[in-house]
Structures are given as structure tokens and as C-alpha cells.
Image 1 (cartoon, rainbow, N blue to C red):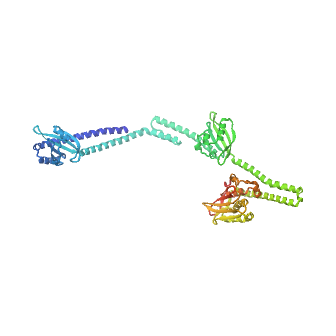
Image 2 (cartoon, one colour; image 1 turned 45 degrees about the vertical axis):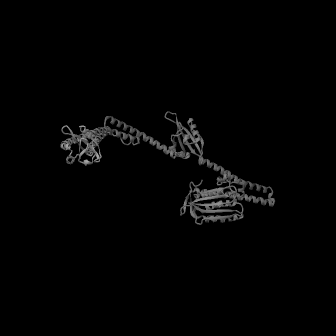
Image 3 (cartoon, rainbow, N blue to C red; image 1 turned 180 degrees about the horizontal axis):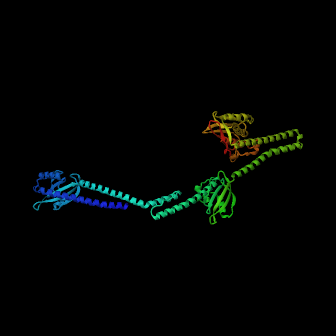
Length: 590
């Protein structure tokens, strides 16, 4: 089509040039004939130089021929003109066509006429009489007439070229489709096969070669379908197995590049398989211990096992199992790494050990003291009334301490039992009423230490609460504030709504808590100053109980303090719906 269009344009260009030249020659011949004819008529007049008759005759002849007619004297003076007054016209001796006619030749030119203000085609002939030049006759016509003829020709030529191009396009397309249609169908079938569409057969048709190619493709499709079904089944089984595993699974090739990774591994190492696939282990996972374990696995002919630590938030302890994967030739093709997260087991074991150690320590001290004083009484101190009474009072004091520890452990056990049941009924209740109940209960203790309790509470503030448990948590915080505040100071309790939370603050003016121990004060049996808190009667369980209760209310508790600056304990409780509800407890406890 491109060659055809270029050929037509080339031919059209020459045709236009030839037609334009032909049209100009035809127009010039017509002008020449008219000029010679008019010259014969005007010869007598030109010889006499009768300007009036010449100008009048030029007008009449122009009306018959539709050409502009100009009659000139041999020296170029205008004697008559069909378009203008000859008297006003300048001498035409310098006009190209007139110069040639003055030389006895036929002159022509195409130029702009300032007399009639348009482009004109001029032709001038000498008028000879008795072998003497008596004048010049010039005929002319606007180039617009020539252009109109040429435009008509251009339109017809363009229409013909367009018709030829369209016809050739239709014929070429038909021929191309006839030749390429079978190949196109096979190409489309191959594209569908590449996309995995293996159900449709490739149509056979066309030449013998095309038919054989289609048959070969159909045979290939059957084999691909069978193998793909087998691979898909195996892949689904493997994906299902890996997805259901709670262990992290990582498969690497012999160059330690990640080939597969399940969801558990993504969660542990905070990455995505789409990112890690094809990357080196140390680049994708960025764990030195795991990378070293993979190197050991690839270099070991037998399975290996090791404990790894993954630093993060929180840290994880992993039980790693590694074994080599052999390829079809029996050589090492990579490694399978299975990681079991034993962090929770380690944590539970450590909590159990700490709990047993703490309980043993807390119980051992008062029991040892009671036994010592009882033995002293048995050895004769009972005979001394003053000493006996003092020793018995000390034993009673330690007995009270044992009672306090046991009661706190029972409270903590009850709270955890509530969490273990999975749900706790919450009812809408006023915060101020709970605060007033706590302050009334602790008012006597505060007065004994000369502590003033200041309450500032929004009367309209209500939350979904289990009131006995909520008062227990609040009582533990206020009781601590009273115990550790300086005499003649204030303990402030405030409750207000900020955004969509109820904020309850308990503030004291005590000795404060060191910043390095602030994060541990909610641990069981943890005390900032064991000797001092033991004198206060504390067992180190009050804040742990308070935190558990607040967690049961879907809230959180925070502490801020500084040495000598007192302490502030802040409870955040989300404002729930207007109606009572059931609080889901699973996952709320730390």
C-alpha cells in the first residue's frame, strides 16, 4: 500500500505539472489568436492613432471575447484598454510582453497587474502594416480562470487516486487475510496456550504445512494439560500443607536464595515472599543467626537442629530444623528450614520459675520470722511477759502479711479465671460513684496517715464496667498512693472524658519511682524498694491485679514518675455503646 500510494503521488505530481503546462499553453494559444484577430481589426485605427475609437473598439471586442484587450502605440503608449481609461495609464514600454512585441516577437508573461489589482496572464503581438510596426495588441485573462480549471482537474485526479487506493486496500486486505488467516488463528491459539487456556483445540485448515503445525500444537496441548493438572494438584497440596502449618517453613537453593516461604515465616521475619523470592537469605531476612544456620545445613549431610533468637518486638526464640534437599541427580539442590516458635513456651517457663521463686521468697520471710519467734518463746522467752507479748505481736504481724499475700494471690486468680471464661458482663455505670465508693472505703487509712484525698470528677462520665472489679483496681491504685505519700500531703483523683476515652488519674506526692524501674512495676511481686514496701504491708501484687482488671475492660494503665516528684497512674477506658454489653476477653491480657 505504501509503494502504491507513493507511485500514485509521483504520477499525480507529474500529471498536474503536465496539465498545468498544457492549460497554460492552451490559454496562451487562445490569447494569441484573439490578439492577432483584434490586431487586424485595429490596424487602421492604430495607424491613425484615433484613441477614442480605439478605446471604444477595445471595449466592444472585450465584451465578445471575455478577455481584457489593450492597444498600444509602437512606443508603449496606451491607446485603448477595456478595463481602464487609457489616458490615466502609464507607458507600458517596460512591460516584459510589450518589450518582446516591440521587438517584433510574440510576448507573454504572468504577473500582478496594479491596474486591475489581480494576477494576469498576458500575451502581446506586434501589429504590422506595410512592413511597419503600427502598434501592439495585448490580450490578457486573470489567472483565476486558469486556477478554476486546474482545481477541477485536481479534484478529479484526487478522487481517482483515492478510489484507486481504497480499491487496492480492499484487494490487498482480502489477499493478506486469505494468506495470513490460518497463521493468525494458530498464533491466537498459541497465545491462549501461553495463558494456560488448554481446553480448546487448534483449528486445522489451509495448506498441508499449516495442518501439520496445528496437529503438533494440539498434541502439545494435551501433554501440557496432563502435566499441568498434576503440577497444580501437587502445588495445591503443598500450599495447603504449608499454609496450615504453625511452623515457619523456608526453602532455599544451593546458593542460599529463597525459593519458598510460608505465611508464618513472613510474619516472624516481617517480610513478604513476593519481596524475598529469588533474593539471598541474608538480604531478604537480615538475620545473621538464621543465615549461619542455613550455611551449616547446606554443608551438612545429615539434619541439624539449633535454637535461634530473632531480635524484634517482641524477641522470638526459634527451634530450627534444617535438612538438605537433593535434586534429580542426587546432588544437593538446596535446604529445607523448619522453624518452630518456642518463645511462648520459654516465656511461660520463665514466668513459672519467677513466680515460684517470688512466692517462695515472699512466703519464706514471714514463715521464717514466725518460726524463729515461736522457737524463742519455746526456749524460755514465754516466761518473760513483756518479751512474749512483743514476740507474739511480731508473729501476728507476719501472719497478717501471709494472709495479705494469700488474699492477693486469690484475687489475681479470680481475675484470671474471669479472663479464662472468655467473656465478662459489663454494664453502663457512673465513674464518680465508683471513685466515691473507693475513697469512702480508704478514708480511715488516709486519715491515719494525715493524707487528704481530693476528687475531681465529671458527674456525667459513664463507662461500661464490672463495678466490683473496677473498684478493686481503683482501690489498689489509691491505696498505694496513700501508702507512699508523705504525711500531710494530697492524693488527687480525677476523671474526665478526652476524645472517645474516659481518663482516670491517681496522683500522689510520694518519693517517686526510678525511671529504669517504671516499666516493671506491673510485674507480679516486683517492688521498687523491697524493704520499704514490706514495711508498708505490700506483696507486690496490687498493681499487677489492677492492670489485669483494666485489661478486662479493654483499657490500659500507664505510669509516670520521677524520684522526689511523686507518681501519676493513668487509666484509659474506651467509651463503649450506650447499652450494656459483653466484653470479649480473649487476647486482652498481656
